[in-house]
Image (cartoon, rainbow, N blue to C red; front, side, top):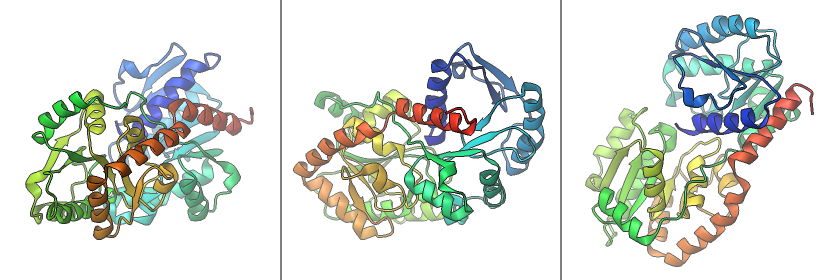
Length: 362
């Protein structure tokens, strides 16, 4: 799972287990995995069609969901990833993780972006309450859609607290397994245009011109949105043999890989939050991230901030981190403090408070 999936899993797991006085219905668009039924106060419901395309989103949310809700008669319909049904009479609440499609629409396929741009402003107006994952995103929703700030609650993401510092001996093993024994920078996330791999590749290529340590760059994630622009940037590299594509990793492997990295390189040009930043704080791995959107809010003073639109800015940060052990130690120390602001338990508590507001129960 990626950010929205982890948010849904971690918050709803805690909410359902901690509020046994309530009955919850989880609505799936395919055969459900029993591991998502966290407690005996959850009833799973499977309805069709599978929402795999904007046309199917419309059918699912405007026809299948209203039909299911009429049978359930819920106090609140909650959607963890922004979508709602405009064709229901029930109180609704959703989570907007970001509005990247408003700022960078061409990063998405044509029908996806048209769907989002048409429906999401309407979802925002329909919602009894909205949760979002950063102060940046709250302000963005307010400005883009004219929604009162009083209707929007900030519910920060957490991070998997299994991320941990890795012993030096285990780091050597991980480096040997993935990077031929060399140190490496790591990127974690879907290979989406807004993750800014184009400029990361260019910056790393310039960094390698002076690198004497054989430092690699590991890319962890699926090539979901591997565009021609990203491919061209990669193909034009002089040092592409030093890029390691691991694909998606299981949690235990990911913990080892992040914990053994020289630094996280997370230089997106747009994020609603940026969970890998906090995961790296838990892993006590230094962080390089962007100075735009939500990332400075999440990173605080515990990361090296760069201009994501400047290849030189990213390159200079790579050089700085690689050559300054004292800086790396300072960032790790600051990360220990910054990570205390973010946990999935805090996220669940804030989300529950927002649900209570949606129902006027608080």
